[in-house]
Length: 197
Image 1: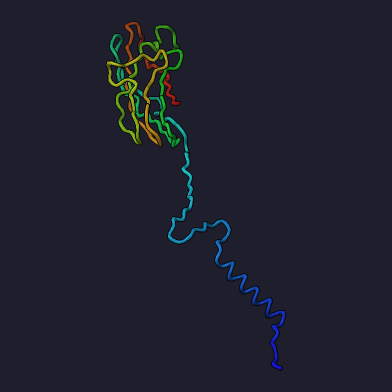
Image 2 (image 1 turned 180 degrees about the vertical axis):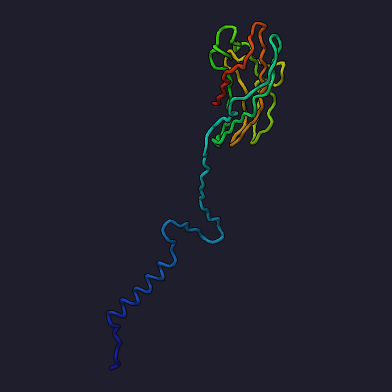
C-alpha cells in the first residue's frame, strides 16, 4: 500500500494563520472608510477659527489740548484717533460706539460756577472714518460739523450696522467748545468717555 502524508499539527496551524492574515489584509483599519471601486469615498474635515481679542476701543492718551480762545468765541480742535477693533469673528459683526462727557463739565481753578463750562456747551462730531477694515456698513455718528451734538448726554460716536467677521474703524472726532461770555481765563479740564458694545 502507498503511504499517506499527514500534516503535523503545527503545520496546519501555520496554514490557518496565513489564511487569516490574508483575509484581514482586505478589510479597512478601524475608523477608516471602506468604499467599493469607482465610487466617491468621503472624509469629513474640521478646523477651528478662534476669536482672540473680542470687541475693544482705543482712545488717545490724555491730556489732549483742543486749542485756545476768548470768552464768547468757540474753540475747536480734534481729539485724536479713536479705533474700534472687532475680533469676535462673529456672524453678525455689528457694534455701536458711544461718547459722553463726565459729570461736572470742564473746570479751571476751584471749579466754581464762573470757572466751569457745562457739557451742554461742548459739541462732538465724529466725521467720516479715516480707516476701516473688514466688510459691512460703517456709519459716523455725526458726519460733519452741522450734525455736531452736545455731550450733556450719551451720543452715538460711530457704528457698524451690517457685515460679518473681524473688522475695525478709526475716526478723529472734533470737539467744539462754545465758551460763555462769563467764562474766566484758565486751562479747563474735563473727561470725554468712549465705549463700545
